[in-house]
Image 1 (cartoon, one colour):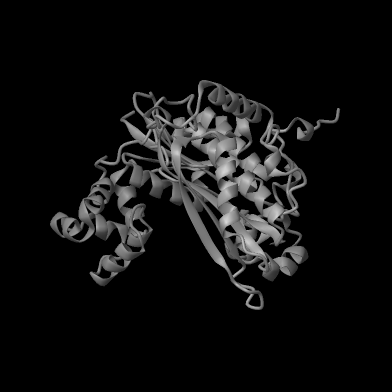
Image 2: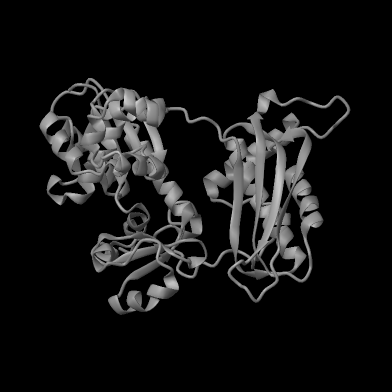
Length: 423
């Protein structure tokens, strides 16, 4: 087998995660809602066939959902994140060269495998399904851009049984001819409009466009896309994603919040989550921003939206210190008489923890003791489930949390919610 890219894409991922632990839903229409149960963000194939649109406000389709017997779930990010980790761990057994592209997608670079690539992909697909319960579609091609296209076709063409191979000139030509230029991976809306104005409407026309014109109007990134459509690999695997330069932790509240005590709890909880992400990439933050806003859709309510930033004396990832600073910032921007809908925390000026510049006269820097403490907290929460250990400043009841009326259990990460099998 020549070296090939396999794009493994989980089918209707959020819906599939819910179905793993509720087998009775496998043939039933299912939807998953966004934060605060606001919009439909995941649909099973049965719901798509009903014509229910992605992103529809739930209150507008609630009656249709009830009438058609659609199963409804709130977003269970804890479950989805852990199921994603299990799928990726499974895929790592097939190749050491892998890029996790998103929560439900990964590129595999397969070289040196014997036999038919389609059969090899089917073995990957069957293994993932057997080990995790998640169905996947696999696109095969000599480049990442063509593999994305192959996966997209594979999801639509049920006759290919979950695997579509574009490692064939004639088949690739037909696929590119049937694909709009704006649907090519890496072509955004502005470039799609530019191509349309210049008579380039299909992916095949884009592939065959003059290189000089493409580079002049779409820069070197656009030229790479054209080369990839021609089967020339020029977008390598990103096996070690760069650390994030900014980390945001924010949620809309489940109900309007007015009391400063509840706002402090929410900001502390968001700060703790951001600090956890910061430590996961072995980084520290030099600045922190806290922001608040009311509901701009409630025209009868007075409106207020603001934020404030503070630069830390010494970059840190120590949660208690960050919570303390975030609380002081909240005190500066909080105003009575408003019904707040959302709050959030942003950490930036992020750098590797070993590169932080210390202050000769300041004791506000992370010590070995504080690092070991945070490592212990993170280790317990990874093993036993998030919030097993948390800071008192985050609150206990947390009545401000986002609304999730249809939330399923944390089947894989919480001891008290593990599935029970009856003999």
